[in-house]
Image (cartoon, rainbow, N blue to C red; front, side, top):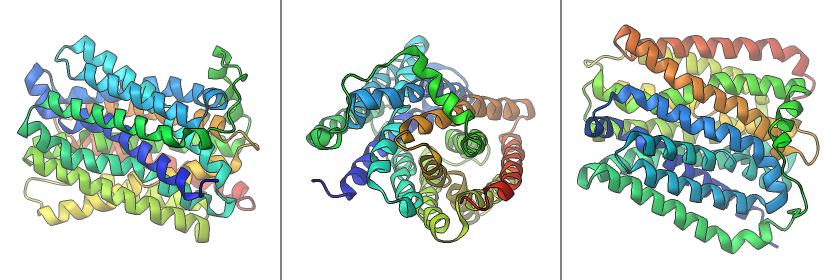
Length: 397
């Protein structure tokens, strides 16, 4: 029998690789935009297209995991991400749009699949910490994207960097095969997958008040997270006159804050505050981080910029593990992957609408600072929802 830490390690690595795949194009957006003669602000539409695909595939994730197993679903996701990156390497807008769709379809079912594995192997009193450790894969992938992809693109070309990440996805899918037999032993080959499977996770979420609260907050928080990670490099490059490599490294610092935050907040939620009070604390930190970012200028000392981004990343990128653990904890027995897929549909909806709105606000006012001001408002709304939920949830956290 495999040790309990194997599912955690494998799911964290897979999460990191698909996050790297999704963020590869945004971190080199200024170079790609210049090469194909479009505005770098349009990177928000790329993120929206990817997460629209992710929204659909996450809803089907629970049913697909039940039939073929969590590892097989993860392997399919990695292959789709690789194909999408190869299509995005073609400097033709229709090809890049199709590539974005495939990346989203590959990204979507990864979290429901990992939730299925971890819910089976994790004690309930350690769920926030374990899920937070697994979710460090997302900022870890983002950190690698920010640190490695821009130098690679400048040393070779932007297409080569996309092809290299596609190769990493395929390698990860191949290596996962050695654990597939053991970890997919609970699959049900006769389980059906129907179009009604798209609606069932939503119905499950709407039937449970605690899941509705988590879904609503994840919608708002994902607007903040993806707007930050999508536009940070372009914001630093255009508004603060950072070089591409320096801006990419700043993104890596933000992701590093997210890694530390996910570990810390999981421990805090399990030991002291509980999930909802921890998320309320993070909403306050996100609001302050967005406000501080809106006031950054070309004259702001680089050390202060890094400190602000580190703290902003710890909250805006650090909330996911606590949220996913709470969803798995509140889900009916044996339905963690379906509940996760249902709430992730709301999470991904926030990503679909968030970055374009951030880009539109920034374009309207001629600066990305306006977008950060909008993020502050979004987090305050999320904090208000969590504050109102405290009294009913006090005896159940």
